[in-house]
Image (cartoon, rainbow, N blue to C red; front, side):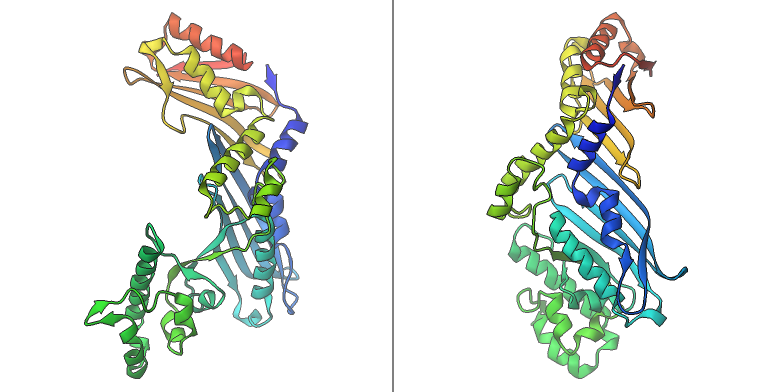
Length: 380
């Protein structure tokens, strides 16, 4: 039976990007803020990471309360996403503070500390869904910009202009005629949308009419982070060079792809072969090459490893999966899972018509190669 040591587990957790580790989530948001004695308390934190042969992606989430002594005066949610592209994003899902405690500087202190932590952790950007009365105006004043969709900056600016026009149109009843008469020429020319004169929600917020437009309105925003590090810094041999060269996930896609792959392989190197997605996929692909006319991994995510962390940075779930397609369209699914006893076990799921001597020999050979002897078999 194959087992994984606690030392190996610790190395795996250490190599996971900071923003995906529950301990980082707690350190980032717990503590006292402002002048009113309010403190943030993280009540739950969770994290998951998926490794593939070419890279990795992941998510983490934290939720908590705003307290004074033992009484609650607000709550917050924060979600982090490591995209397969290498982009590391934090989403400010929710922040509420009781009206009796507003004006204490709590929110500004809470966010300032968090943004400093984001920069250290290599977060690329923060996203928000601005709403909740003052949120549509407040986030614009705090440096968030409308998310512009498009292949280049011209297309993104045009898209932002379209969204700003819709924001103004939704707020028309709140804007007096004189203010609208001043604003309208920046939105339209001859009845047609002008995509070149007002493309920034921050610019709109700075205008006298901006508050009337944005308060109570909703929009999706993004704020880039001036990072101190890349998230892979110190975890791969090129980490220091990355920092010195200013490598950005958003500006250096080739460098980012290589760094994400290197970080994924580093994590996998501390796992047994049956939990390394590359080794797992290759073992079954090779031994099943003559089954059903040959079998190959089913797409880019045909082999993957899923790892979940509990609130104390312990591994609560760890398993691998390989899905293969035969030439005649049949699917074979092989799974590995680390048990609570530290022992790795396997599971086979295959069509009954493939459950023959040839397939059985091929699967047994792959399991032996991976060092897994405890296998549960089922035919569909």
